[in-house]
Length: 244
Image (cartoon, rainbow, N blue to C red; front, side):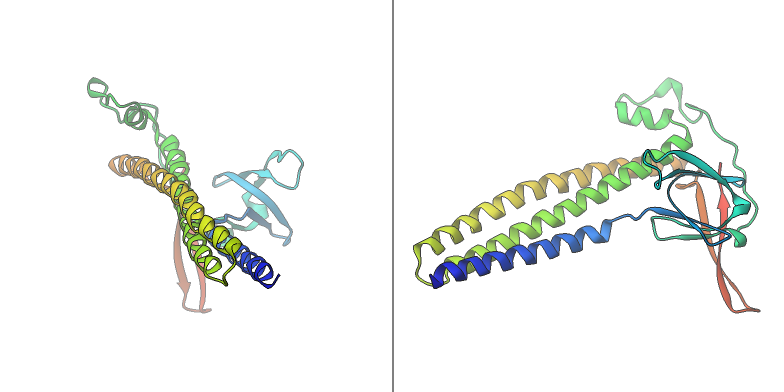
């Protein structure tokens, strides 16, 4: 009876530790909603689609179907991005215009790459490349997070299985502990390797897109932030430049 209670307690403890570890790892990569703060201090929970010198296009997450909407810049005090950055609109400078490029503008039509992915990169315009970069960068982060979670699960299973197998003389403890020590690392190791492989694949694609944007002398993001400091009133601010 005591052996069964000990095994149950250890198993529950292992589950709680693993759950805490998993939540901690995912919390690091969790991206919050964008928030638009109006000048009257009311807030809009949003998914920002595009920011221009005139208005912000977004999806309103407060509506059932996340309907598309927009708000003019003169009504916005600041924008809290899911990346953690804050745009203080009142401290923003005038928009910086960059002429939009067209599909295939930077491609050498006589020497297009044979690889479909490489060809899609050189044929895309810069706005499309920025979208691709953001997509592959986020997928690479997800792969890395998954690899950490499953590897941690494998290690926790091995340690917990060893502890259970060596707690007392019960054959049930040994059987359960040995099974956990073998199955856990196998499961975690396989899925950890898959996630790590995905991380490398998507990271490589993101780097190719980044290199193409650099070749074109184009920014990675449609927004640029420049920190500043006002000596007179000893206050900091962010200068925002828009590219559209």
